[in-house]
Image (cartoon, rainbow, N blue to C red; front, side, top):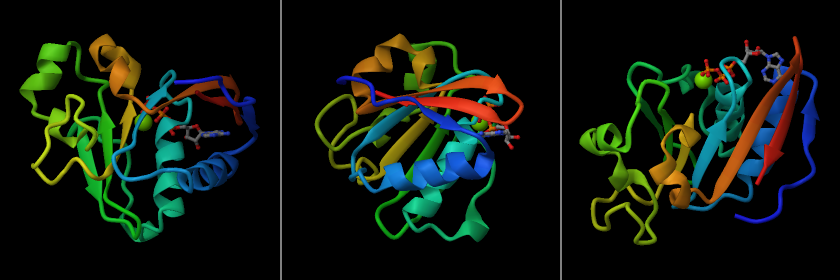
Length: 155
Ligand SMILES: Nc1ncnc2c1ncn2[C@@H]1O[C@H](COP(=O)(O)OP(=O)(O)OP(=O)(O)O)[C@@H](O)[C@H]1O
Ligand SMILES: [Mg+2]
């Protein structure tokens, strides 16, 4: 990870989606993105924007996979894997649910040959598990400023 970009001040959910859609153009297969920030700070809203930016069919996007932990979406560019680790406490738990294989085609903890390592992974609460830190190509932080304002920083 390198220098943070200039923070983006979003004034509405729509602006957050647009910002995410723009960012999605940079992404390539195998990228893993951590989203960090409090409840309601805009992480899922950002993922919706990513999905639109990758040309997923808007009819299919649902909300955060807080209970199911993972949603998979086809998009024109590559599959989008949307994780939510809110309910996961430890790396051992994370390993037990067998998600590692989704992360990265580049020989990190993601295992080659399973065929699911070539999507784009976006992980809400990615910073909860310190052992995953080295997996992330981008870390995006969300800060609640007021009712409709969120500061977004991409590192
Ligand atoms: N500028 C903004 N950007 C994003 N969301 C905003 C903004 N202003 C208001 N909101 C509202 O804040 C809420 C953000 O919810 P969202 O589910 O995206 O947060 P989250 O970070 O994923 O929360 P959780 O940790 O519970 O999954 C939505 O209700 C959204 O409409
Ligand atoms: Mg969410």
